[in-house]
Structures are given as structure tokens and as C-alpha cells.
Length: 456
Image 1 (cartoon, rainbow, N blue to C red):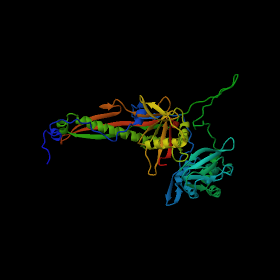
Image 2: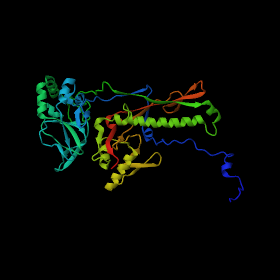
Image 3: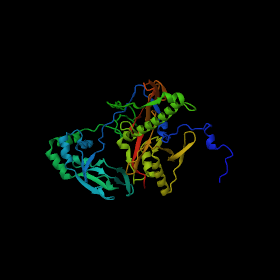
Image 4: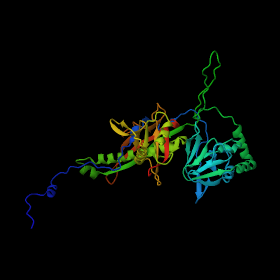
């Protein structure tokens, strides 16, 4: 037998009491460091043009392949990425593509040896290959890491290219397509068009250029007396890159009955707008990283996309990324990539430092450069991701964000909430719009460490 109830229960009392409520919560809100760290430039015309000094095309693009099961072949038109074959018609490129043969290499196998005749062209269809040189005292030095889409030995097309300056060795299982010396001779003998193109390339004068590929500016220094000074001018790109503003929009709908009757203690329209704006800003950061037109991952210059030495992100890899640009402001990496870097540091007995940012908050850093988390950087199904390093600001010829402020009904910079009316079902509508883009002013302002393994 239970004791009789002597007082009003708390459960019953709550029917007459007002509960204390939180505002609506949202799990998808992240720090959005990229939106905070980018210096934002107002693009009044809706388009931002990046004028640069003239840069000569070096033919340093990447070659694309297709496969039928285990059989891999190069797409003929992609061979135009080799500077010697640029401008040839599809029929000639198709003939050249048909003469490449496929070879597979295990980790540690040598593809080309320094000192051997440079007489064949290699295209990397899959895997990582180390380019290895000889140091001052006879030891091996790692010159570069090459991966799928890269090529080497294209000088062999011109004939008598000398010797391989470096050794090329597979780091992972690799698939390489090779154009043999016999095939090169047969192709040039059979095709007058190809032979003429190679002769033209061989005899064409190379315009003076800097180590960055820009048109050189003639200067004189160290002279005495009345030396004749060289005349010069600075040439510009004839067709500079233009970045148009992108937009993220949605139409928010709220019934007038909800807005009229259920507006206390919290304003329903304000909360609906707050959560909608949060989601738009999350999408904005995602687009700044992943958009194929202006996103950082796709906008990085091919010469500034480097590969990890062994898979996981090591201190050596971040040093390579840091050494390729001046004034690196920060790294941007997926939280799992930051954790993988921490594990590699622990394994080596190295302890990365921290940096104080944003008024006292501390984040992990390497060589004094902060590493900010960004979960918008994708992780592939195979467990690889990328790490971004960048210099920012117009004054430093870096990466900048673009927005358009001063638009009608603006509630945040570049973001507007415009009332669009009430329909015949008594539903209020608000158009929420955000305009933005990003621009890389100079190629070396942005670098990407690719194929970073996070599972080992």
C-alpha cells in the first residue's frame, strides 16, 4: 500500500508554470575560420579582374587517362599538355597516344636512372613517384614527388636529349605509360606534321623569362661609367582572369498565424532567419573551398600542388608546403588531418607549438604558422584529404575574399534579407541572399598538400 499524496506534484505544477527555453539549436554550426581569416574586398561591379604580369605558357598541366578494367590509356587530346605537342591536330595526337605502352611498378622499383640516356617519355597514370637527385656529398636527395597526371622525359621527343638528370623511383604501386625510343622515331618519320611541329619547337627562340615564368625585365647593375642602359617594359596578360560573384539563396516561408500567435517569448521570424543565415554561411565556406570555379582546392596552381612523402602528414610535408611561399598566414586542414599530423609528430618525438589567435584563443601551429580546422575540406572514400596553406591580402598579393556590401536590405556584409510579400495562403516570404567569391592574386599565394592519409 502506497502512502497518500500530501502535496501537488511537480509534474502537475508544470501545467501552470512557464518553462525556461533555449533558442533553437543547430548542430551544423562550425567555427567557420575561413570566413573570418580571409580579408574581404568589396567588388562594386560584381566582377573582380586580376591583372598580372605576362606569364609564358610552360605546358606544365596534367594529363588525363581512362581505363578499361586494368588497361589504361591516355586521352589523345590531353597530350597537348606536353609543350612539344601543343597545337597538333587530333589525328596526330591520336597516333601518338596509340604508341604508349603500359607498365606497372612496385614500390621501390626504378623507372629511370640518372645518367642513362633520356630517350623515352613517361606519363604517370596512377601512384606516386619520387624524383631523386644526388647531394653534395654523394647521398640521395629528394627533388620532388610526382603523382597521377604528371609526366617526365618529354624532352626525348626532340631527339638526343642527353641523360636523365635524376632517378625516378616508385613510392607506391604505380602505373606508367611509356613512349619508347623506337616509337618516337617511327612517329616522327611517318608524320610530317609532327616532325614540323618538333622542329618548330626546337628552333623557336625562348623568350627571356624569370624563374616564375614571367616575361623578364631587362636591367643593368654593377656597371661603371657611361654604360648603355637596356630599354625595357613590363608586359601584362592580354586576357586576365575575372571572378564573378557567386550567390547562395533561399526563400524562407513563415505562416502569418505562427508569426502572430506564437511569437513570445521568442520572435519566430528572427529565429527562423538566424538559423537560415547560419546555414547559408556554412554553405558559403563550403563553396569557397570546393567550388570548381573559384574554390581554393580547384583554384590552386598546378605547380603549387605537392604530394606527401609517405602518405600521412609529416613535419617534412608541412615544411615543404611552407617553403614554397612567403608570408604564409595559416594552414587550413580537416580536423582529422590535424589529428593525423599530431600523431606523426608524437611518433617522431616532435611537439608542435600553439599560436594565440582571435583575442586569446589558442590553436595548434607549425613553425609559428597556425593550423585552423575546416571540416569543409573533403575526405575521399579512400581516406585521403588535403591541407591548404595560403598568404592573404591585396597588399601581399595573396588570397582575398570578394563580397558586395551596401545591397538593399543588408543585415550582414554581403547578405540581405528581403521581404517578398504574403501569398494567398497567408504565408510570409523572405528572400535570403549571400553574394561572395574568392580570388588568388598570384599563383604562389595558395598551396595544397594533396593525398594526405588520415587513417595510418
